Image (tube, rainbow, N blue to C red; front, side, top):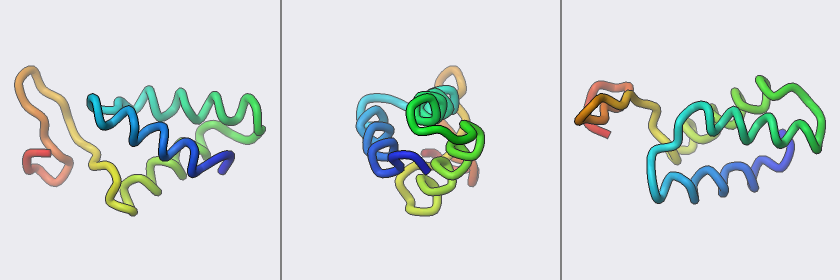
Length: 75
């Protein structure tokens, strides 16, 4: 993955201030492949997998007044 550590750190920095939407992750992937080459879908998938597997991010849903992790509990 192009600049994987850099992408992870940038996303974690964003996550300190607010939730990181999927579109932002794919945006980083598109930017990375524009300079380093590759398929943005593969980069985004690998990036998401790494963030979840390493326990750095939790996928979830945003509602009007709630946040729910994919496991069903509050995130």
